[in-house]
Image 1 (tube, rainbow, N blue to C red):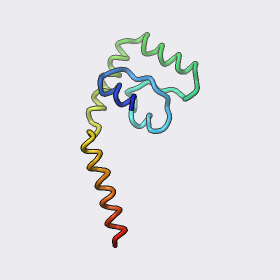
Image 2 (cartoon, helix red, strand yellow):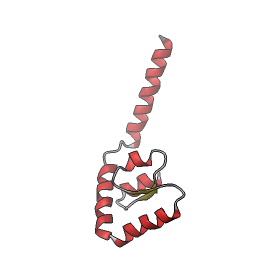
Image 3 (tube, rainbow, N blue to C red):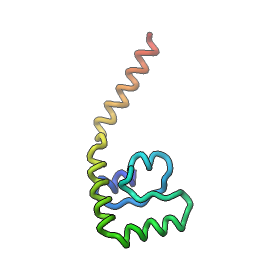
Image 4 (cartoon, rainbow, N blue to C red):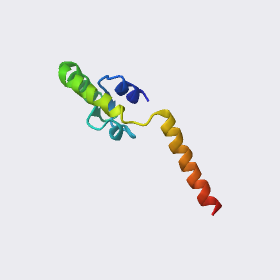
Length: 91
């Protein structure tokens, strides 16, 4: 959730490329392998040394985050899945 929240408020994101993070952020974050301290250092330096690039990435990230469903939409989607499964089980 931290990555999502950071993108929603327009912060540049540096994250590990694990789980669903790469799909979530696309090209709008600096990603590195988990457990690689040198890559983390390089990624942080990239963000700190290139503020205009970081600001643009943050702006794109915020725009991406604006397309994500809100909590109510997610709840409706999950309920819909449960309804579909329930209907199939009853058939």
